[in-house]
Image (cartoon, rainbow over all chains, first blue to last red; front, side, top):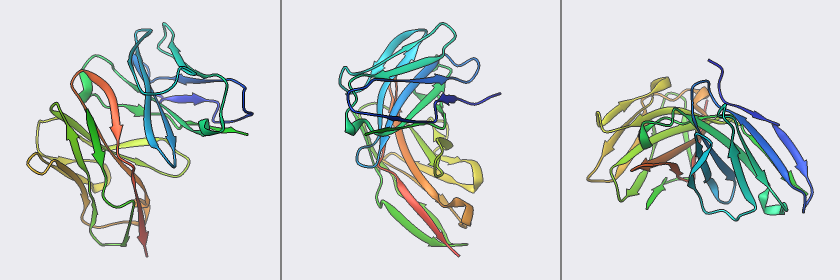
Length: 115
Length: 113
């Protein structure tokens, strides 16, 4: 089975712009989660989607949003970019029906640099 | 609420020596615990996980971890370090009906020849 894929792998934007990142989960997985990784804050949970519905949400401002499509692919959007949004954004997928014990499988990430 | 503390942001060992990476957790519900490894410019790869079936968990690449409820710990060990083990290691906790993983700050493992 193919793993979790994320596009693009690298992105450079300027402050004030918006960006959309894409994630394709492992075939058969219905849950997609997004995490932000920075040197200062470490790995932080953004949100989780299951069957096109946001099921869990982390403590991030409303500039961060996401959605999930009927094929389980997910996108996250960051509007009005700030310098502090520079980070590695990781997507993870899991089956979605067995609760918190499920293994989340991570993609390689999208590295976003905001200038 | 859940949290994870990884003691030691950087651990350095010699090749062939014991690897011990420490993880303590806090959870208001029965926890599920995970260890992930991250190599440079890559995502996270699962090493092992605890889901209450057995307190001693064996993972990939010779790693294992023991869940100790009384100590709220889930330390990662490997008897003999290899150069290829050099990477960053993250301990994470989840629980209840929440699919969110809460991660520790990570421990960078250096293996010296």
